Image 1 (cartoon, rainbow, N blue to C red):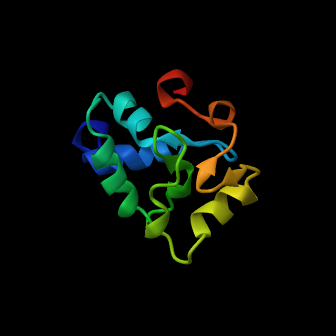
Image 2: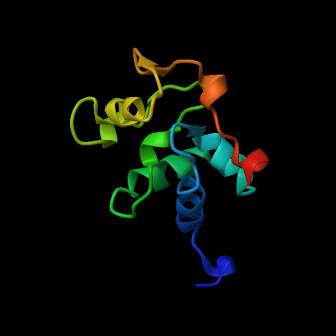
Length: 109
């Protein structure tokens, strides 16, 4: 499939698959990278539908580092557990030291 024929969701999945282990990004950062500045919510919808596509959706959080997508994961704390297994500290659904573990695709890709 040629890049120009990819759906928006597929483009989101491609970016999300590049988030390094132990790092996180935000819905808005992915949207911005894709040139769809006001489409953070659409990135969230893509993440909701990504669970069978080998996409590390647990590494995508809101702009403040909150685990707003956690209810889309099986189990009550699976998103947090996945992040913590990568060394990311989470307290009260908030990523600790968010600015340190934040990965910006616009700067990294």
